[in-house]
Image 1 (cartoon, chains in turn purple, yellow):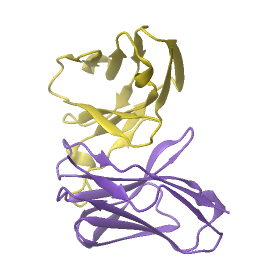
Image 2 (cartoon, chains in turn brown, orange):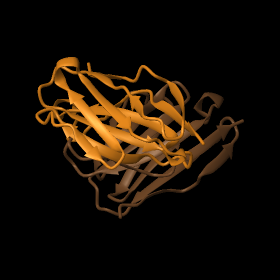
Image 3 (cartoon, rainbow over the protein chains, first blue to last red):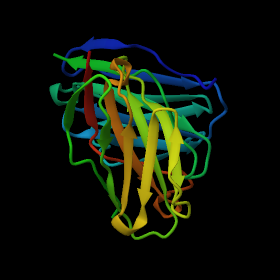
Length: 113
Length: 119
């Protein structure tokens, strides 16, 4: 079974802190994605990566950066956390090709105080 | 631009009722793929089905069925004889080869529909 794991289920940080969210997949997927999910807004794509060291901005990249040094790991970085970044963060991965489904991790609920 | 609309935001039914979740999409591409995902209270989205634009056959899987109609740009999902375990948020999503950027495929999600099945 495909497994996508995220480093934390719940995280509480303070405004201005640097925050790292880690995601690891074990199926050798080329693509990895970071979304945030907010009530009434659905899932919004922050960044995605189609290969090691490659990244592309999604729909809401402001305030975030990413890192993909190894194929199985995709990190989301909040350089200086703000309260409006309080959200559920979902990581996903997939094989290349738009017909392939994405596999999601359990999510990290981040609260920024 | 690609768009997915799930007009219903929340539905509540009693167990054993049938329920249909609507999904309407917009795309100018002739080749595209539609997906349904389920997000139970645990939070992890689970893939349910994929349909490509050239295959309009309806599909049935147990109590689940999907009705894809290109003429109305709809990809509706019906749960027959709903059960409490069906309670979840359901997302419809769309992608196409032309939305690729640098080789990676972007999914466009609807806003989701929360289904509550009461005993």
